[in-house]
Image 1 (cartoon, rainbow, N blue to C red):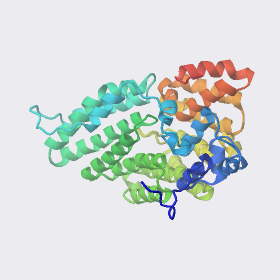
Image 2: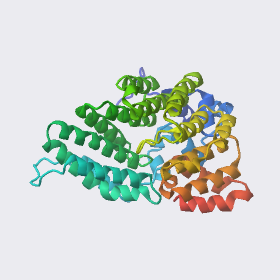
Image 3: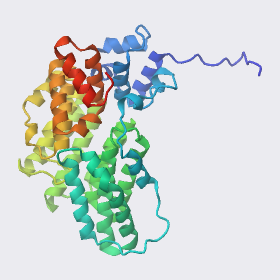
Image 4: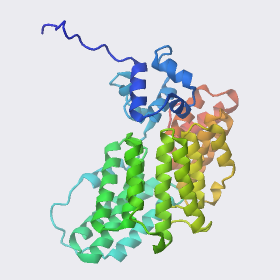
Length: 410
């Protein structure tokens, strides 16, 4: 084929130009991206201007995670590399859960559907398994496919108020599926479950179910890099469906949605807006009292305080993040998975502060609290791998042991 000299092919993108493209797509400033990977804004500038070359694999993995990139080829141009290979470990039951989500029951089942009350007890039990000690992903995956099938059958078969009750339960089951799929190489399924949960909540015409779905969709949108304005708009429109006069659950869900907005603003470096919405969540937690915890969303005093660490991390305020962590008793949280997650976020705060000894200690503690939470967390895996390879002599052996526990080659 003749070469068209009047329209020469564009030069290939350098690594630095690819990083800049993804940073701008996410709406990050250089200081925000720098903080997320534990580097300076000048380091990001040097990468983007090609004064520095491509970093080694552990830091490259962290950069891909911060930019929301699942395929390293987006940054490197090498189609043989995939971030999921190194950062997103697949749970042994992933294929079975995938099949349960992508199999459609086209033929009517002969057996009678279970009543909503029976299904509600099963859903409660799965939430308890998710928040409990031990391998929560494994326990949930063992029962989730059958639960989803029975809920879908009941939703098709029941009518009237009973059907709406089942739809609310079906939305919760999809939330559980989304949580199971988080931090695994199945981003399309995470989006699918978020959308199905919202559809079920709307079919049920339940303001509370819609609000809960908006909370989980905010996580989906943040991970997918969707515009923060769209995330905040969804959360705030959902708050208008709630009425605090109806009781504690509406107050909790309203606070949760303000927390979603706070996290979205923090992710894009908008401190004032993030703190304003966190204040609304804080007000809701104070209204509910220190003893209140939502039975499966876990909204309460401890959750609001713990997410202050994540907010400060995303705003690249290491001192504020460490200070927030110092004033929280994570051991009082009723969910092992949440205790582990927020302990990992505390480790991220100390990583921003350059305190690598504390990072290893906290990641080991997070693993002890909930092994599968730590094993499938991208920061935990990336930090363990990096410190095992390049950490100082004081922590290297501990970091290598941790990396083996998390399934990271070291």
